[in-house]
Image 1: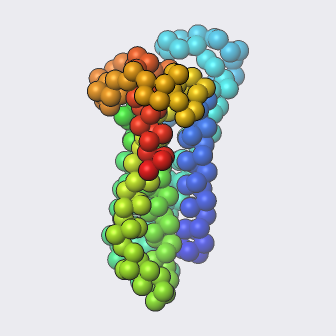
Image 2: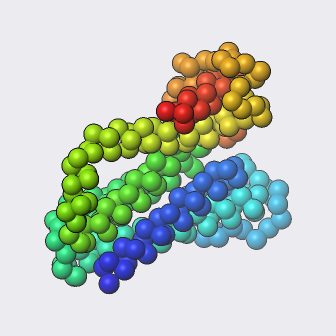
Image 3: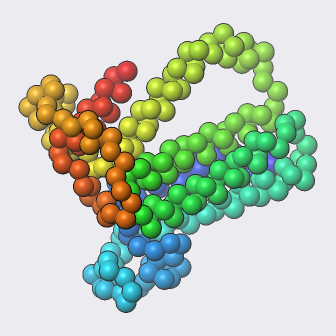
Length: 248
């Protein structure tokens, strides 16, 4: 049961990551301006689009609200499954050869990930928070996959390959992780179209006017970051860093 539930949790984690990306690309991060509900309800209110609901500044956009809530429902289900996995591991059912360190860390991490999901909304889609939340989704998936791999004994070939190519694997993992972060940073700062529709050039140049200082600026809390606040030179800098990362 434990192994099967782990397999289900990995599939569910991938679905949550995809739903999170879909929510982000649909500009639906603030489709429900409160958390964990939506305008004070468990589901999107059944009222006409554009309705101003008492106590909330943002008018309702039902399509965005449902994108956000479906993502929350899926993420909550994943959190529950991971909690069940932790309890099963703690009880020692089924028997598997690994300490409680990884299951415990995974359970704690998914709680932190839930907190970042809340802060994504309450801190008005702050780019740093949203990017961290995105990366957290990938980390959750990796932790679950790691748990699954630990259910059996690694083959001699598997261990030999890891030992022989450890440096290459670590470098590749670091570069890939950085590129994921840059992709998230590009999206959360609304920099995807900062170069127009040009590729590989940007704004008619191979090296346009860019502001890398502002591109890496964390930004204060309490500001509404929906649709971005950076000037285009900063956004172009983010876009070009992401492109260079892809080449590497």
